[in-house]
Image (cartoon, rainbow, N blue to C red; front, side):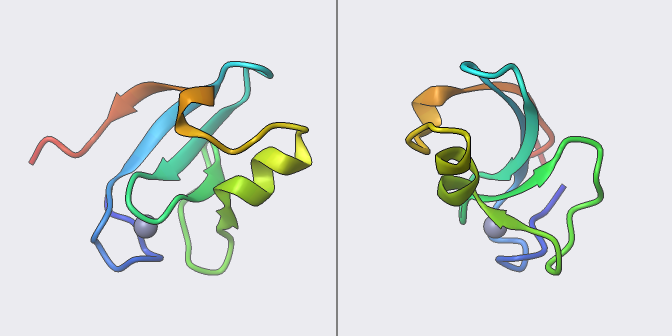
Length: 73
Ligand SMILES: [Zn+2]
């Protein structure tokens, strides 16, 4: 799936946050995030770092485990 925020520059990955077990969707280019299962939209993205800091985390990709990628094209 292509990212609506950066207009197809990035691919949206499904990841799990190690510390909390929360699944997210995140763009590997611009770090826009969406809740898992939600259709990514420019109106609803949240900045990755903002989201992670709200959980008491730093907002690093090392805090994530990539579960799937749909960017194989
Ligand atoms: Zn993006």
